[in-house]
Image 1 (cartoon, rainbow, N blue to C red):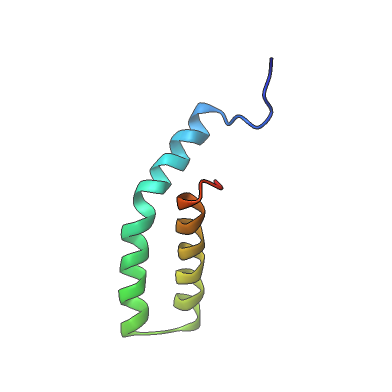
Image 2: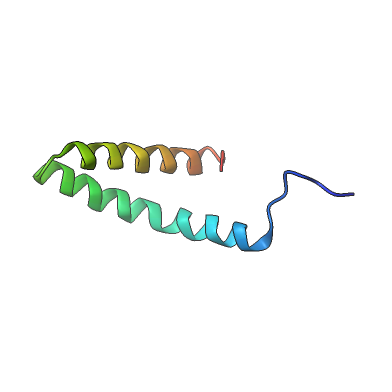
Length: 60
C-alpha cells in the first residue's frame, strides 16, 4: 500500500546530507555572528539553530 508520508529516495539523500553539514555550518555562523553581528547573521544563525533542533527531534 502507498504511504503518502514516505519521501522519495533523492529527497532522503538531500535531507541526510543537510543533516551532516548543518552543525559545522552553524558553528561557523556562530563565530561569524560573535565577531561581526549584523541582523542577517543573527537571523541566519537562528534559522540554522532551528534546523539543527528539528534534526535532533527528527521532525524533518
